[in-house]
Image (tube, rainbow, N blue to C red):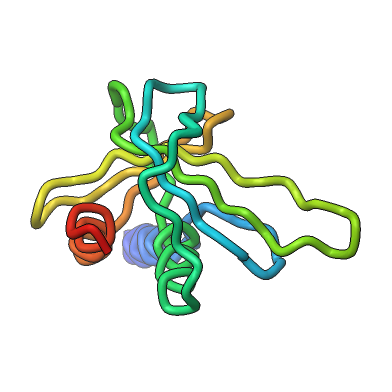
Length: 141
């Protein structure tokens, strides 16, 4: 009985230590992050609302996206609020692909959600990231 209890505790501890899956971007320099009002899942709106090019802004968006955690089971999400396009610096004549991501922006104190345009996994951000995204997207910066 003692071995069973110890084994169960160890399994629970190991299960809690499993790494979680996050969103990923290319291991390349990001040149610009574009944001537009979404017109629905599976498509990107090319009428841009914001264009982020400053190093501080780019670092924020990279961190927000790459720290978003995949949710098990995912949530049934309706139409996204925004489309986010991550564009990388060109290497010579070769253009790197643009990452196309949908964003459901949470309200103050809530989490937000990302999803690759060609995916169905839902990735969750923290409420702190939502607060910063709201500052970037709603304050007109």
